[in-house]
Image 1 (cartoon, rainbow, N blue to C red):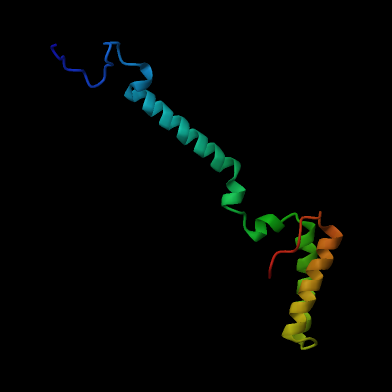
Image 2 (image 1 turned 90 degrees about the vertical axis):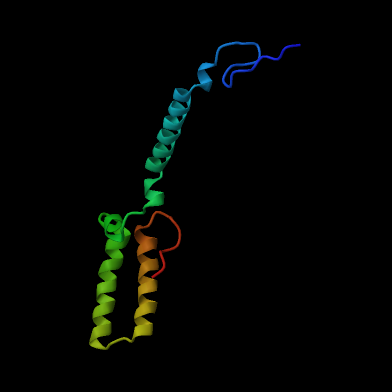
Length: 112
Protein backbone atom coordinates (compact mmCIF):
# COMPACT_ATOMS: atom_id res chain seq x y z
CA UNK A 1 0.00 0.00 0.00
CA UNK A 2 1.56 3.16 -1.17
CA UNK A 3 0.54 6.32 0.58
CA UNK A 4 0.03 9.36 -1.55
CA UNK A 5 0.49 12.81 -0.11
CA UNK A 6 -2.72 14.73 0.22
CA UNK A 7 -2.93 18.29 -0.95
CA UNK A 8 -3.69 20.69 1.88
CA UNK A 9 -6.68 22.15 0.03
CA UNK A 10 -8.08 19.17 -1.83
CA UNK A 11 -10.24 16.44 -0.43
CA UNK A 12 -9.35 12.77 -0.06
CA UNK A 13 -11.21 11.83 -3.24
CA UNK A 14 -9.29 14.37 -5.30
CA UNK A 15 -12.26 16.64 -5.89
CA UNK A 16 -11.49 20.29 -6.57
CA UNK A 17 -11.73 22.88 -3.81
CA UNK A 18 -15.22 24.24 -3.06
CA UNK A 19 -16.05 27.86 -3.85
CA UNK A 20 -16.89 28.39 -0.18
CA UNK A 21 -13.39 27.36 0.87
CA UNK A 22 -11.65 30.03 -1.17
CA UNK A 23 -10.30 33.24 0.40
CA UNK A 24 -12.67 35.46 -1.61
CA UNK A 25 -15.63 33.76 0.11
CA UNK A 26 -14.20 34.73 3.49
CA UNK A 27 -13.75 38.32 2.33
CA UNK A 28 -17.36 38.43 1.13
CA UNK A 29 -18.58 36.93 4.42
CA UNK A 30 -16.63 39.52 6.39
CA UNK A 31 -18.08 42.31 4.21
CA UNK A 32 -21.60 41.01 4.87
CA UNK A 33 -20.83 40.91 8.59
CA UNK A 34 -19.60 44.52 8.55
CA UNK A 35 -22.66 45.61 6.58
CA UNK A 36 -25.01 43.95 9.06
CA UNK A 37 -23.16 45.51 12.01
CA UNK A 38 -23.29 48.94 10.34
CA UNK A 39 -27.01 48.56 9.67
CA UNK A 40 -27.68 47.62 13.31
CA UNK A 41 -25.62 50.58 14.52
CA UNK A 42 -27.56 52.91 12.20
CA UNK A 43 -30.93 51.57 13.34
CA UNK A 44 -29.98 51.96 17.03
CA UNK A 45 -27.99 55.20 16.68
CA UNK A 46 -30.24 57.05 19.15
CA UNK A 47 -29.87 54.22 21.66
CA UNK A 48 -26.09 54.15 21.32
CA UNK A 49 -25.58 57.92 21.12
CA UNK A 50 -28.59 59.70 22.66
CA UNK A 51 -29.22 63.25 21.43
CA UNK A 52 -28.37 66.07 23.78
CA UNK A 53 -31.02 67.70 25.93
CA UNK A 54 -31.29 70.74 23.64
CA UNK A 55 -31.89 68.63 20.54
CA UNK A 56 -34.57 66.59 22.26
CA UNK A 57 -36.17 69.61 23.90
CA UNK A 58 -36.38 71.80 20.80
CA UNK A 59 -39.99 70.92 20.03
CA UNK A 60 -40.89 69.06 23.20
CA UNK A 61 -43.84 70.72 24.95
CA UNK A 62 -42.91 69.10 28.27
CA UNK A 63 -39.42 70.62 28.14
CA UNK A 64 -40.76 74.03 27.13
CA UNK A 65 -43.29 73.98 29.98
CA UNK A 66 -40.65 72.95 32.50
CA UNK A 67 -38.12 75.53 31.27
CA UNK A 68 -40.65 78.30 31.78
CA UNK A 69 -41.57 77.15 35.28
CA UNK A 70 -37.94 76.48 36.24
CA UNK A 71 -37.02 80.03 35.25
CA UNK A 72 -39.73 81.36 37.58
CA UNK A 73 -38.52 79.11 40.40
CA UNK A 74 -34.90 80.22 39.89
CA UNK A 75 -36.01 83.86 39.94
CA UNK A 76 -37.84 83.32 43.24
CA UNK A 77 -34.75 81.67 44.69
CA UNK A 78 -32.44 84.53 43.64
CA UNK A 79 -34.89 87.03 45.13
CA UNK A 80 -34.75 85.14 48.41
CA UNK A 81 -38.43 84.21 48.44
CA UNK A 82 -37.67 80.49 48.64
CA UNK A 83 -34.66 78.45 49.73
CA UNK A 84 -32.65 75.82 47.85
CA UNK A 85 -34.61 72.90 49.30
CA UNK A 86 -37.90 74.51 48.34
CA UNK A 87 -36.59 75.24 44.85
CA UNK A 88 -35.71 71.56 44.35
CA UNK A 89 -39.14 70.53 45.59
CA UNK A 90 -40.92 73.07 43.37
CA UNK A 91 -38.91 71.96 40.32
CA UNK A 92 -39.79 68.32 40.89
CA UNK A 93 -43.45 69.26 41.19
CA UNK A 94 -43.26 71.47 38.10
CA UNK A 95 -41.70 68.58 36.16
CA UNK A 96 -44.54 66.29 37.25
CA UNK A 97 -47.14 68.92 36.34
CA UNK A 98 -45.70 69.49 32.87
CA UNK A 99 -45.38 65.76 32.28
CA UNK A 100 -49.01 65.29 33.29
CA UNK A 101 -50.27 68.10 31.06
CA UNK A 102 -48.15 67.63 27.95
CA UNK A 103 -46.52 64.23 28.32
CA UNK A 104 -47.57 61.18 26.38
CA UNK A 105 -47.32 58.70 29.21
CA UNK A 106 -43.66 58.00 28.57
CA UNK A 107 -42.86 57.30 32.18
CA UNK A 108 -41.41 59.29 35.06
CA UNK A 109 -39.49 62.49 34.45
CA UNK A 110 -35.72 62.30 34.03
CA UNK A 111 -33.62 62.74 37.18
CA UNK A 112 -32.47 66.27 37.97
